[in-house]
Image (cartoon, rainbow, N blue to C red; front, side, top):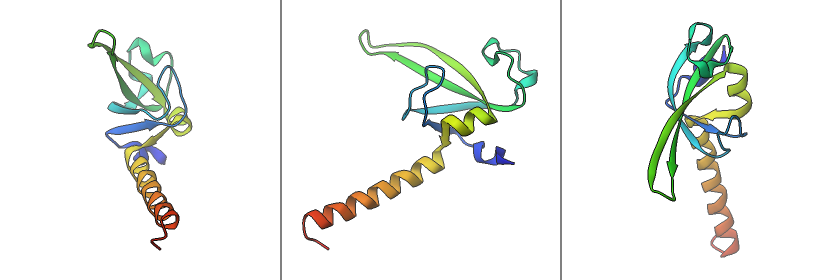
Length: 109
């Protein structure tokens, strides 16, 4: 089962959902069966899922806004997020590609 993939501290949004923005990192604050979670934000979801915390900040007033919990099922996670380990692997590949490009452009093969 793909649940082990989501045994993580952070996730990265790869496709916007419920106001969470693509490319942003979010903290995982809980996991488990959403069927028994009575938080209104669960919104009738059932099955295994994660609680992801959206921490918000008003850059105009320089004040923290109330944070908000978002609950997602396994299917929603698979479609909209990657875990922090996957995000780091992508980052390393991009760095390697950029290094190779830089060497090609500047003749330092």
